[in-house]
Length: 372
Image 1 (tube, one colour):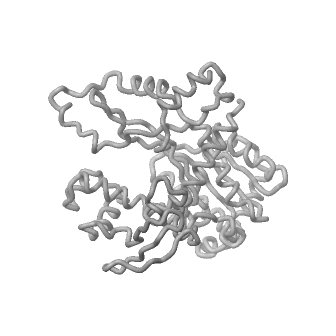
Image 2 (cartoon, one colour; image 1 turned 90 degrees about the vertical axis):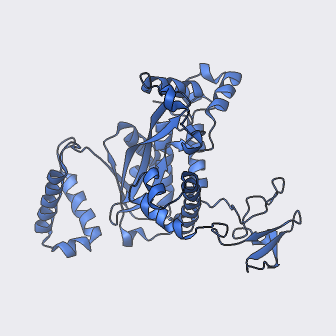
């Protein structure tokens, strides 16, 4: 199936942008200034230090427009800063927002404000730590990566209906350490599906095949409305509780769904870029999703042809109980340890030998049959 190259590049560019800090709070505040969003950290030549505030925060002057701004602690205007860490711990341990509000003794709107604050801090941390992993020594740390997607549900309400919309969260883990090196949600908060549909109507996109459209990255508003109508056909809010639905506490209200195939290709491009400066031979393992396999094979075809990348598509029996899965995993490790003559500790400390053993076993293995 032919894919929309323009849409893939647009999504890849958006994902690249997410890896970089946006300069919020560290750049000129004037909307019309060319230095807007160009942070002091990235472009120090655009600014000049002009003293400090009474609280000790650095004040900067924009050389272009002459306005000043202060770079202080990210939480300087938070009245209850001690709650930030508490909210984060509750969030990562899977507590609902209503539970977080009750346990942390915060109003729901304050919880959402702190979630926005945590999101910005996580982006800054990710940009510093993972903004560019191309210089990593993959030969030392391991060369196997595993990619899979999870289906997440988000509330997308209106005054008459509430819908749990399914989104794909596509992530790649460094198999040797378990560290998540890439994670992308099938959602663009800056997307405008209604604007996309209007543009498509004006330029004749709707009559074209999807791969030939100017707008091939996001769903259209009509497509999304049909999807909502299908999943909420029998769901209606009772008139007595409809007035209590506070849309200010529901997310998201805007943004657009990214087409799943476009997301998969862009994700594969991000992984390819991450390992592009290494001369190692890499092993990419994916779940048995036909679209994901095609995306990776298309993106890294030159590397596969050159012998720098091996791709394995793996199918799992996902309906086994957890105890059975753990027993099979433990048995596979015992077999591998016995074949290599290593202890459990030695096996964990020799990731490259594991790679070589797996490749050796796969070499004479027939495609489509079980492998342990």
